[in-house]
Length: 569
Image 1 (spheres, rainbow, N blue to C red):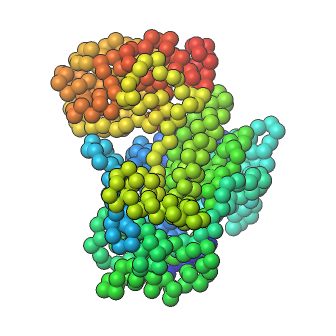
Image 2: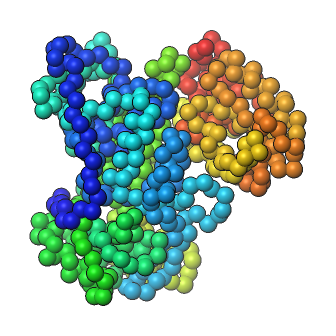
């Protein structure tokens, strides 16, 4: 990869190095949990732990945020995860909100699509926000909560898995080396991370030789808030091109160069500027902010859990940037892992629960890798058959709607559905294809909370929730009693009763002011959902379950035996 910073308008913060105590006393530091890597994924993990009251130490080899805008597309699901931590609103306010995508063949639009065609969601389909802003906002919120020690310029150079449990980390600082014995380690140190290399873990998958140019330019232009992708544009010699707007009058340009392009030469401003000029026209002035010429891989390590070490984000799996699956997939990794590890650290679940991280996130990584590989194959056909297929699809898509589903300019990131995992309880009742099935992410909807407007997802997350739908005032008494009984077995379960708008407002309930909550959850009076701390459905019942059914579903969700003796008090 060739990378050039040209004229940065963003002022990078510098975070202070503080001398670790272990450098003075020479002792091995003992910590329950260490996060290696202070990028988006590592910081998100620290913030999630802080929200659960779990203290962590983050080690990062740098003293600032990521250089260059890098990952810019933040998906709806990622924003919902950030919203639990109180940082999403700031990101949405700063970011460029978009949901419309346009696809061109040459300079002619062949179709467009809307990623969020329905109303009634707090978070937009996507925002574009430079990675350095995302990291800065995460650091600010982490500092505000006060549960995380951020150690800048602390580079992990080695790791040893201990027979007695835990791992021994070797850490290099500007003032010397020290060691940490950690009960658990989260490796969020990226594709070239020291943890993976020290453990001898190899990536397997596909390497693509095609080279692409990414550049950020600053210009004043009235281009709309949307994603534009060109196949075979004349301004770029028939190769693909992508344009996205970012905050601060920054635009992301991504241009296909071909496998034989020289990355050093193509990253030179005198090569980049004419390409941009042909794309945007000669009448617009612009300045270059950042340039990168890259190739990419679609690969992963075999397993994401190795005893006390958990790999997340690019340290575990890497994909192409088309489809915004890299950073968003990494955030979903920590969304899946953190609540499980927090329960284990607090003694509320056994270590066996942590094995489900592999069971759930490896298939999610494979889904992202498959979609990224297909996108690249469509954009860069490797043989005549593939090229002919693409030409036929592009020709048909202008007039035949079914063909548009075959056009692949990067299938945009969606949350993974944990369809068949050790934590999922199969449906007892038939929902006729309505509502989120077990393993699916919970859908949002507008609700009233004590007479104030709010959102359903804000009531979920960070603990198990029994979500009960009632037909009217007082009708939820039976299900509410049931969930309170369950709470005596497991104190971290909370219950909410959702009532329709025509019911008398119950101060203890949520009022479905638009009918969207009942509709999106496929609910009727008596429907009950058990929702996991990561806002994925654990189990559901069309009619109120027995206490034993609820207890069994909860026990399964935390990897325990069925029955109260298998559940921590």
